[in-house]
Length: 193
Image (cartoon, rainbow, N blue to C red):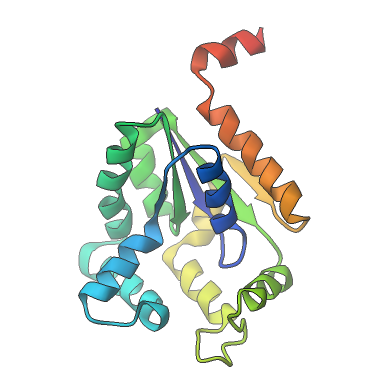
């Protein structure tokens, strides 16, 4: 059993890492889905109110609320798969939650890219990084994410992946990490000899 968590600011490449995991046959639990579901349950707009609901969940149920709601989904997928990727940790408290539950079987990957590169990616998705389309500006999103403790979580990463190169190069780096974590332990040990 192994759980790989990803952490990174908006536009850094967490979604692309999840795509690679899926291509490798690894199920993905997206922590943002917990927030989107709660947003819908509250009758709010997931596109506009995501950040507000994420903050409210943490205020109402504690800073580990979203991680704790993700645990049953992760454990469910581990029943049929050796490895699960958890997309989108936001804080050191969430890291604590997963480390406590999965111990040595948890690896945190920080995906990092410069602000201007991330802004270009968000613009390329059809969303304006400046917020002129009615969405939240990237600077404000970064500030909110950092307020959750994202910088502390990123500092605790077991692996750091700089994602300022080509998409193909990034996919290959993620593919190597995922494959390393999904190899049976006895194969890794024999390769090390």
